[in-house]
Image 1 (cartoon, rainbow, N blue to C red):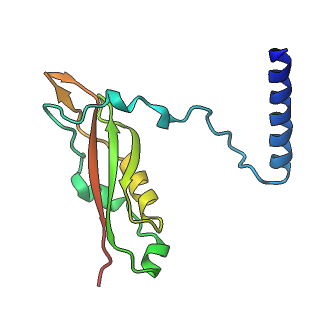
Image 2 (cartoon, helix red, strand yellow; image 1 turned 45 degrees about the vertical axis):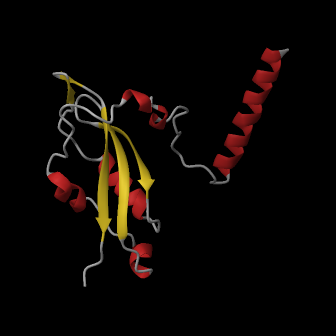
Length: 142
């Protein structure tokens, strides 16, 4: 009985997706069912012996930032704080905004951090997973 209900539910979902796709409601890309956001955040240490550092420094991130038009139009300035989850190889596995300013700045900051490469974090002489907060300042030039 449960199996029949499950199969029926799958058929309904499939038909609904097909109708939405025909109407142009869905992107042509299929999104993953388990996004990378579902990592075990607790496995990333806050304190390590050698914390990760941004290769190229904050200047490297600033080069990847495009000030959002909506923020410019509304005179929005401030700092977006992004928590980056860095793996043993210095790659960003996940990033999330922990304090934002809105108007598109949060998304731009998060995306810039996701593109960065960090030095590998070490703890007790071994490569480790670590999380680090990256502040990204949005300030208009005068």
